[in-house]
Picture 1 (cartoon, one colour):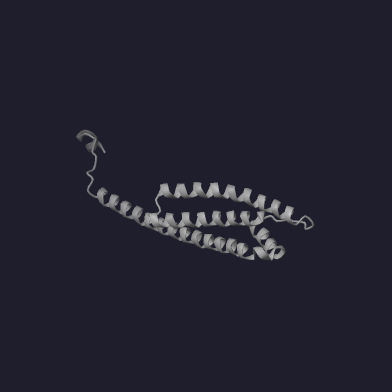
Picture 2 (cartoon, one colour):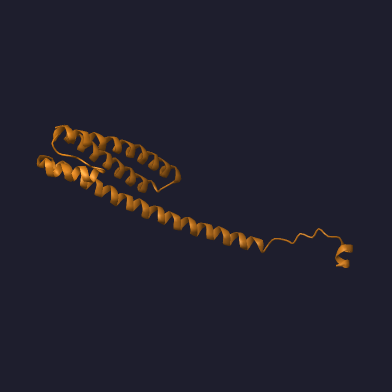
Length: 151
């Protein structure tokens, strides 16, 4: 069935995003790896929009008498699991992959928040160090003896 292939493609796309999130966390979360993560996410999201449209078209072809108003992947998967019970396991795989993606997104968000706190602490240490250096700075006297006596 054509829908099974479309559902499998959706599952793989979500799994790619989850894997990319895990690799980002494992690499330590540098700025360059974050840019790569965002670019990869944008590409996959574009693919997901196309895959969703193709899935809805396949649903319309497989079930011509049923009106489809699927605006999201979740609605499409729910509808397929009701109309085609033989695809229930494939639909469950999409749900499971989507849940993994949400969990990995939360882990990335937590990791980035931790990096943000570390950066704030490092900036505080640098600022504190620059305050200490100001205490050793010599005053700049550019005036002459005559001007100092007049004041």
